[in-house]
Image (cartoon, rainbow over all chains, first blue to last red):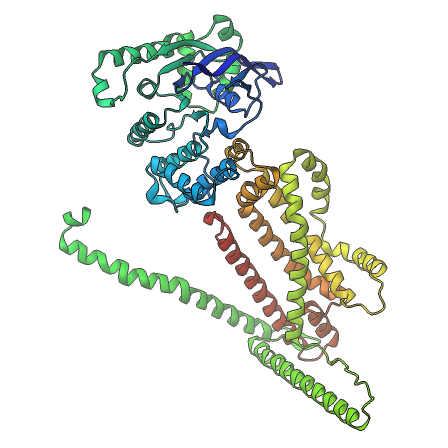
Length: 292
Length: 331
């Protein structure tokens, strides 16, 4: 299949008081149409930066992203984003939140009735038809995330970008959401880039898992093909040796090879700490331990 | 689930606590305690008043003030009757003259009686609301612009910080002179004293509203801004659909603060500007110096407090109605 999204030689530097801080370098990734790709790596390794560059929310300092033959320069609905904390407008109902996106994207090409049908269709897809008139404050975290996904899907994006979409949910809700997402994916066959912390989630959902080395100057360390046939069922896979092998492979990478080159580790420890400051301290501690 | 494991005895003992004692506690809290507070205040007041002798007689106690409330209302009614009678006489006189001489152009003269206390309450309310609305019309768009643009914020911040702590009364002489210079029509539709008081109110309402709006706009969740960017909302749509609703809670907080300050400032401004409102009433009574004056001023004080309280409550109701974030719309 042809390449839909081409991330080539992407690098990112942030200016700091001690000179430029290199967050990413030489990120190269080609994604085919209909492919589900996970980005996995330790906190602060620049996964979100990669996603934001693809989304157009950040500009890469070097290299670039080409989507369907056109360079990405700014954000747009053809690269819909599902944010980690749902980002629904709290003063609008679930329906109105999706409506805002639909009106913006299809306002000129589709009639009122057609738009309404499309909004309802997408909310049904994420099983939220019963709470269309509820505001975000009145529904649970999982439901909010469902509406967020419905909003993104309703834009009919060429690439769906998901930034740790289930990271803030409890384990049971997360499993539910993963199953829902697989169902939707089987039906729509979207091209998806998803950031995750969760090894099981990555193996269960992805066609390919892109493992990133730790920052600073993070880059792609290894890419793992997940050749498990679909539809996948978490219970059946739990006993499948291939699944466990893939899982072990990702875990091994995260625990052994996450350090990047030794040069980076010894010189920029403070930068690592700063980049990871907003994340749970566990990852940071792990990183220091295995680097030593 | 837990009720099943409970013994019937515990259930019986447990229930009246909610229905009986709970209700009793609520009644005590909501009715009895405030009533007791007011009663103690009235007692202290009347005891204190009896021991204060001023050059205008004894300081008025609650009863004297109550009497003056009655008197003020009677005066108002009498004045209204006079007004009606005046217009009635004028109409009859004109009708008679037109009957005698069909070419006569009837003259309509306005009733020029003294404003009553109730008229003055009305004037004060109109003045404070005009000043407040004028301030809102300037402050909210300005606050949004400042909140959206860090550059504009840096430019405006020093001015706002310096003018914010200035008592608006310091502006009053300047406002008076400027209004006299610029608003120089021989037959003004709106009284100058009204404009002076109104602009003074506006000047003090402006800053809390600008600051709160700007802070509200600047502190919008980054993710919501990103949603707007992904959707490529045009600037005006961005303000209307994202910025404005997101900052409504903060805008209302600023408006409530402003209105509270405005009402306090207005009374002083009216005293100085001689705008026919409650402030002028207080000042005139003070100058008048009759034996009833202190009681009438005290009546005005109570009315001023009560109206201030009602203004704040109405703003709160408005905030509840308009704001999606019900959490911020408490006391």
